Amino acid sequence: MEIGHHTRQEIFSQPKAWSAALDVLRAQSESLRAFYREGQFDTVLFTACGSPYYLGLSAAALMNELGGPGSRCFPASELWLNPRLTFRKDQRTLLITVSRSGETSETVRAVETFRGQGNGAVLTLTINPGSALTTLGDVNLVLPSGLEESIAQTRAFTTLYLSALYLAAFWSGRDDILSELPRLPAASNSLISNSQSLAQSLGHDPSLDRFYFLGSGARYGLACELSLKMKEMSLSHSEPFHFLEFRHGPKSMASRGALVIGLVSESNRQPEMAVLDDTRALGARVIALNDCDADVAFGSGLSEIARNILYLPFGQLFAFERALSKNLNPDKPENLDAFVVLK
Image 1 (cartoon, rainbow, N blue to C red):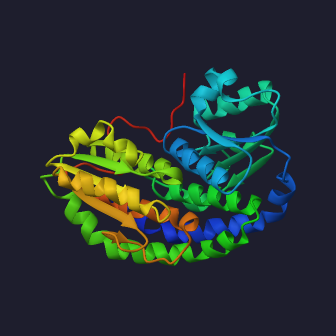
Image 2: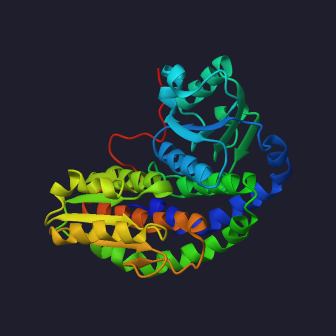
Image 3: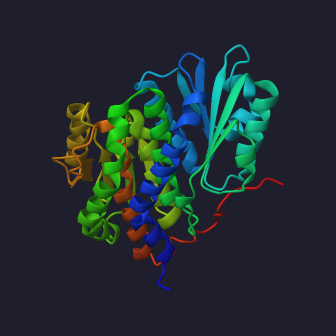
């Protein structure tokens, strides 16, 4: 079996996994509607570890953008160890826990802490049927189409992210967004096919030695995730930043040898592209991702909220190719386990 076989297969099979996940979510629509009613919760709190934590950052921003109750995200270890700093007993909170394995110790303990000290309800999101987390929520959503063999998350992350997007749109009454989601698999297939050669050429470019991923709003969590993929798979120096924050110090690293990848939005395109232009002038190589007029153009025609997930496949492919260029196995990154169990 070739090196990276599982990771490659999991990246390329994401569109099929998304379609299956949407089927599961639609089948649960009535129970989800009964569980969450407008005004029932004062706040929504996402919690997770590792990649799902970055998913939570993006999902919380989406909930806020769509006008739901104030939403935040904390690492599960913070909710477990510092509950007074993460939720209030006088507020009715919806806790949404996200985990690929459903077995991560901090995530399980965060739910137990919230149950003992909090006020509200718990919804769990995982892809692993029969895991510990699937017994802890008032509602437990399991999306098995995202199951993976690889340690670094790709298909699992996007499947869970799509589920969080579905929930945010469903509970906000945004049928216009929900109607767009079935078009994402075809858009992703086209994107992966069209951007594969660029990901390969960049990944195997020996002149590049450090990588920066820029994203703002709901895209900041996605930039964090892509930066993590680069670290996990290829053991490369990689950091994420909010777009305009990159000017405040980090741009000192934007010289020859640096690659800056911008998750450019439509709503803030002008100031974000200005950051990329400034960075290019300093000597760094720049790649812009957007639906159109970009180095990697999705061409989906979908609304910005619906298409945010399309920033992920190119970054995953790039990290995958970078790992291969360094003779590393992206299926089994060094010093990592699929999930963390505390003794």
